[in-house]
Length: 486
Image (cartoon, rainbow, N blue to C red):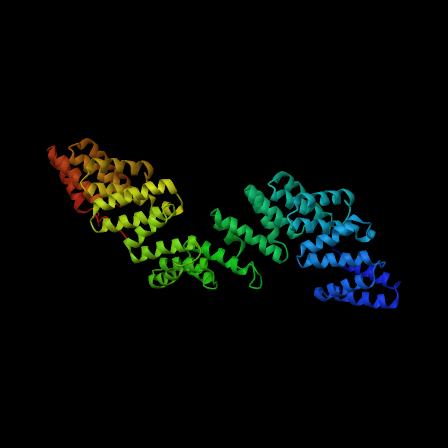
């Protein structure tokens, strides 16, 4: 609202009023001009009571409507603007009355009525300098009602009249909903170039939330690390996003620099994970132990899982599974229990838990399972092999290679397939797998044993010169260091 215009008009009218009215009016308007809204409301209402049917009655009500709008008391704002809208208010404020009524109804979720007011505004006052605001609210209403094409049209109309941040922010929100990446990044770039304001900072926060959710950490980092200042109401949320992004890319010290400034439970949770990754398990456990009783169910269950994992508490992990059967950490909990059994040479139980990890992972999915998926498939095969279920092991190794042909344990899997076939007397098949280890995995810990078994095959065939070469290669080969890793 152009407050200065209506104040000037009222003061012009005040000259024509009798002395007592003029003094009362000038005092009330002065309070309004100084944004002393509480006292201004008292004095303006007193003026209306003491001077009914005054020449400036409509203008006084307009000021009251503006005060209630500024105070977000939309019900009272609507009351005054609606009264003025229905009558012949002063021509200088007629358009602003319409905008005030539309904004009040929009804020009261009366979208159908608000749309009617704004549509009439752009029809009646297309040349008004505030026409952008009507188009902006029409776009916002369309967005809320999932009418994205119409929302885009109205917001573009608003931008053609005024290029302010609040419109760009609404357009950014629309592009996020549409998942239009090129347009989204373009709008974000425009917003970043705007002068600092809370609208700008809110939009950047919205953009970074999207980027974090969709794994676009590079976009977060490319904007810069101090684009939202400490004075902004969005500063803490901005640091939480940055801290989480740093954690997810493995920059744990930088993550802690951001997260330690915050008091939120989510920040504490990610701080604990950072300490865990930095091998400060004591600090991690202290934080997680407090978060176990969080009222946030997700933080509580996640904290229970990580606390149990750090503490290697099998009973606690099993309880976590029982209490949270659909949690996306369940596959990892099964994996952790299985790995504990595997390290203790309890291959029957490790096979059971790794199989549960795979099955629940296929059902639940999620990033947590992806972090252990390959090892789960491999250790199912390894558990079968060490539990002397060679036929099942062979199938499991072949399944692993069909999914992870260049995986972390591809050399191990190829060697074991060769070994099982060797033990089954299928030397022709075993040779191809041992040679695959020699040719494709030259730094493998299975190189020495592959050469040894190739030597054995040639020795059994009476090919002693060839066997000797393989035995000599085996002596100089890399030795296996075991099945487990930390």
